[in-house]
Length: 107
Image (cartoon, rainbow, N blue to C red; front, side, top):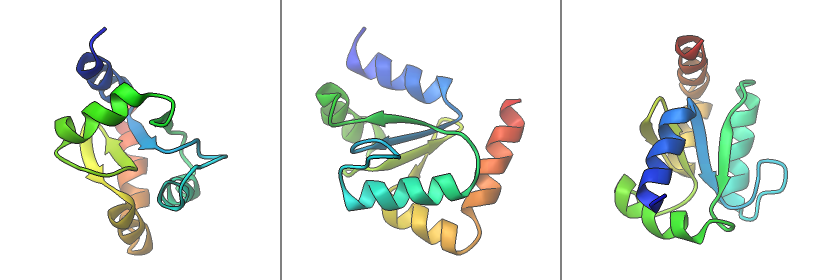
């Protein structure tokens, strides 16, 4: 499978998807740690892809997403943003409703 097809499949199959360095339990960078912590505090399950183990995705996703950095949060097939946006939304009370609505629609 081509890398771009793999990315599109991951995004379409996972309601909430975080492309990050490491895993939520063992993040490999501070930005990924903060983003995954904010997501975990929302209380809903989410998928993740460790881009350090997937060099092809790490190379291809920024171009596809038109977003140069990681982490990247995708909800319902749409790019929400990176660490700063995730944290700002969380602090302003906008992330949890977005996540909860996405999970409710997926059921």
